[in-house]
Image (cartoon, rainbow, N blue to C red):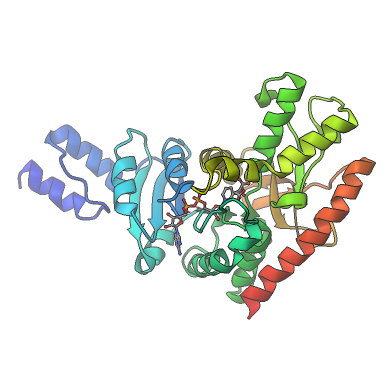
Length: 352
Ligand SMILES: NC(=O)c1ccc[n+]([C@@H]2O[C@H](COP(=O)([O-])OP(=O)(O)OC[C@H]3O[C@@H](n4cnc5c(N)ncnc54)[C@H](O)[C@@H]3O)[C@@H](O)[C@H]2O)c1
Ligand SMILES: O=C(O)C[C@H](O)C(=O)O
């Protein structure tokens, strides 16, 4: 058998098939990749061809913790996969197109990230996306329950305040719900809060840590400016302006994009930061803490975003909110009212 025949035989086991590899050096590379690449985690991105999905896929391909990257969408995954698979980083990339390939995309995954669904246009709320995105998330979570019930799931699709409860109901119905493994991604609120607060303080945003609790829509986004690290204080005007800008950060981008979508690049950045924390937790790193919208007993609501510690099983510890000032206590009341309705809406949809 000549080299090209040997390559064809090995390539036949890969998706997409590897082509245009010449000579023995190429064959060695194919052999290594056919075994599953370097040690690391298997990650699937559902909605990989979208505005978030594409840069998220690229950034995950660059992440050394990832050994296998499955890109699933109902459109355009062959192109996105071919493109990303040429990056000379370790992760093996495979593409999956359409519902009939969902199960193959999910089987064996350690982490599943879901940015599938429609984004807002100016004038819309995140809740206006419910009618389309609720069904998308439900179907994808049914696949997860069947094919990788132990995977950590990061839900990005809006409205997060409802799609996370939908995912939980799907998993409960399938008898596999583990609250430690289902995480709503609110990281972009933290990323924005760090950026905007750093601007006001004149600091490098990487040195700033702002806890953002509650949920991921309007007044449910509650930055705790009294707990900013490094220790600092704000005037009442600064507090008002910062809180409002953080709560409306998504709308700021939606309006600037003028009908072409919502945050995609900053979201991909935030999603990778969050996913990397989940993978570091899975690896056993100590002290990995991020804010996330999770099943929670921090308030009387069944779901709430707050700081969580990530470990080998996902969410290992949920931290209490800590001392709130009067402004934040008033914000918390508003946040909980809206959140309660959004959570109930998601649960009712999944149960019907
Ligand atoms: N959590 C957050 O902080 C945050 C931030 C930004 C955007 N979002 C949300 O993320 C979602 C995606 O935003 P986007 O800008 O990438 O949108 P987009 O329209 O650019 O991409 C969405 C992708 O989902 C795919 N898709 C649709 N139905 C699918 C299905 N059934 N299975 C798999 N894939 C499917 C589409 O083909 C498309 O490629 C939106 O709901 C948006 O509101 C959340
Ligand atoms: O605002 C949106 O609709 C997208 C996202 O939730 C965001 O916060 O940018």
